[in-house]
Length: 207
Image (tube, rainbow, N blue to C red; front, side, top):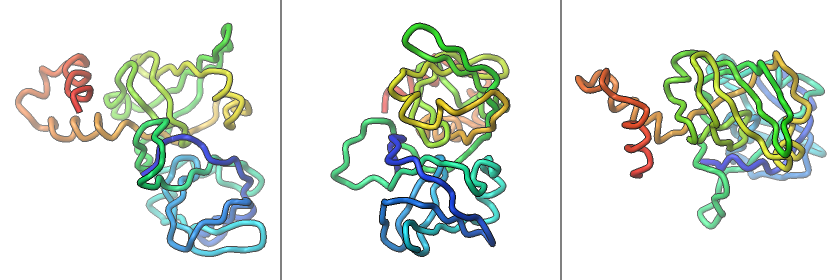
């Protein structure tokens, strides 16, 4: 479990035979869970100046794999401890969608980012709800027919990789696990077709 608050930005040293090597001053224990651009991976080894993780074939199919190439930089976050502060929201590290950035618009003291996503993923997006984009905990500003908009404050924009992102970039997405759980429970229900965003919002906010 993670919070969506980035611990460090680190460069990819190598990616070969399903093993991802990251140059980092952070030293995990073997078997530790590390979120890399939001995807939960397991530490399997070390080298001078960094650590190695394994990406299963399933994980590689679910993520924006091109962003894990040699020379790319990634967001990393160690798993939460029981005594950790929760400054973001509960993030599982299970990528359930890939989005494409279609607009980046600076405005006053914020940056508005629009991300195109699949219809299935957008069904799990609630205005003012939570989302993780490349592992970063954010709040959904608006949800549209084919995309959603995020309003990002300067601190977050400048202290993540967001400042380097361009339109056309694909990003890892994870919907809020409470919304995802409610949607799964309602799937197939005779009342599901009559459910509205207000219904989902009311159920989730009741947790």
